[in-house]
Image 1: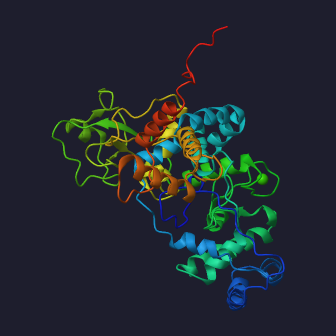
Image 2: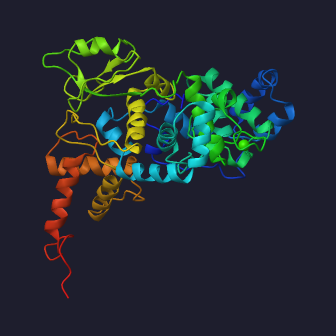
Length: 421
Ligand code: CA
């Protein structure tokens, strides 16, 4: 969160590239060491003791792949329906419900203390780190030191490096556990180090604010973040709406809030046709996929979620997942596409089909990394005759490959066939 994620993609959708370690006998990167020496007085002035600095930066080598991440250009703009299909799929809803049940006492206490409901907190957790399963594997100090000395935005990353070292210095997190995204977000909540310093909470009372090994600390820290971002307890984030015929949403946006009565006068209804609720809070109109897709009225609570990672698609994923955890269904209005996105289960199935066709795509993990994308491009070229296929995979490609695989194995019974004795 708050990291310069150039795509609106959280770490868990990116392939988990294990940080390539330099061999232990490699000479320290001289340029990095020279840069770090020059930074040491500033670190000291920022509260990093010389001993801490020495302990964590001596012999440190650069991690070139984080610079690649910093400069990576998206191969294509991820459509919002792809983004949501993978972030809010049946698996994540089921797992979120299990987490709600498992951590109910803590979540109730968090809601009482910070004024943010359990479903919202668990939804952030699910999107940020897949409920603690995807923290990122980059050693934070090494990544941040590299980004502090090379590439764009060095001064931003220096602030994060110093904060990471202050966190270690205070003993909140064990150094070997401090790993995260390439840009420095870490733990269950994927806080950047400076965000950690401002907002992390010691909820379990052991004296440490630990977002890596304490679920209660992480859940409370997420709630604290949202509360400090303006979350109003009991206010819905918003809801899907139906626009009256001929209504133009042009020029509208989540920031242009108007009273609910005004929207009612303009003819907006809830997506199921019901009248807009009596809500004493202004709301803005958001149409993230343009005039043909779903439309939403969003309150200031949507903005609180938005501030976690400034992207509307991201905010909508969390808001929608929270609604699903409360028992709501999918959006009523379909996304404006004839090739809908894939859930993670469907991504894994696609990877299996690609592997069966002989593509070397690595692990079947539902993460469409570079090798999966290359295979997708090849198959799109072969099946659809596209001259310059991009690496996007949707339902069309999955259906086509599935049908082809079935034809290639005519003797195998359909999955639903009853087993005769
Ligand atoms: Ca703690």
